[in-house]
Image 1: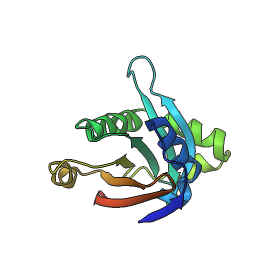
Image 2 (image 1 turned 135 degrees about the vertical axis):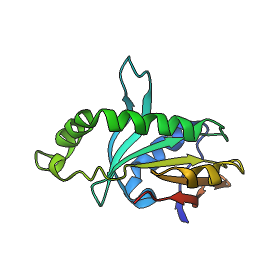
Image 3 (image 1 turned 90 degrees about the horizontal axis):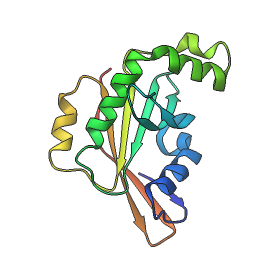
Image 4 (image 1 turned 120 degrees about the vertical axis):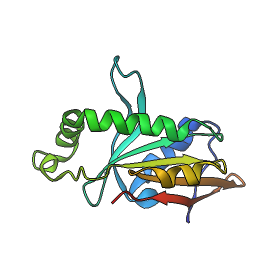
Length: 157
């Protein structure tokens, strides 16, 4: 559980911006890109792309409300990431320098889903996947205190 003084977001974008600003503290991830386009053929935008301390690619998806499609949407983007490694490597090269893409750990890219809550079916479903999926809930206390809590993790490592 991580607590930080912040202004309560009214929209998903506000939450996304707040967490991206403090990504290493909140999720142990270095920020690479926001609203990353997966191209016309794939048709999507990844909320946040990052890389963790083990050089593992990380996708973070946010929802302001409980969403039955959050995990599926994240898996859709993980599939894209696996098929477009060169795009991710170029992003890492641009953001972190010429040697960084050489150490990317592709063994188990991570998906972090951030939402106020998840259904009772989400945690058992996550356990069935062979990839690394983390479910993180958030809750606001008043307008000044945000709490994040990991409620489920499936580490595919």
